[in-house]
Length: 69
Image (cartoon, rainbow, N blue to C red; front, side, top):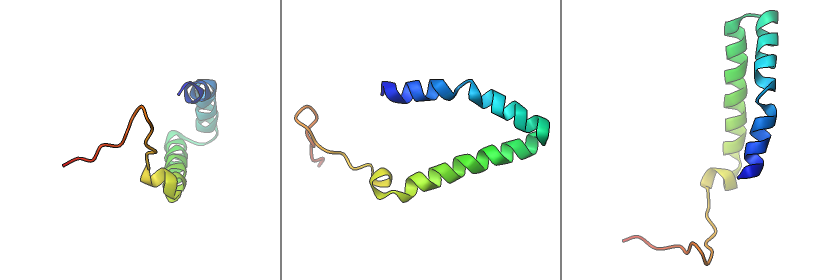
């Protein structure tokens, strides 16, 4: 939705600044390792929440649930 897009666009300029700053303090391999660790950690936390992991859909009048044969 549009709120997700706005949230993503707000943090878009911060990522290169933070990445460049971290590379200047350490090196590229360490920065990539930290970034990948952060992505894996946030994905794992999200998958631990059952309602997020199961992606249960609530039927509505516009989009009724249709049983497949």
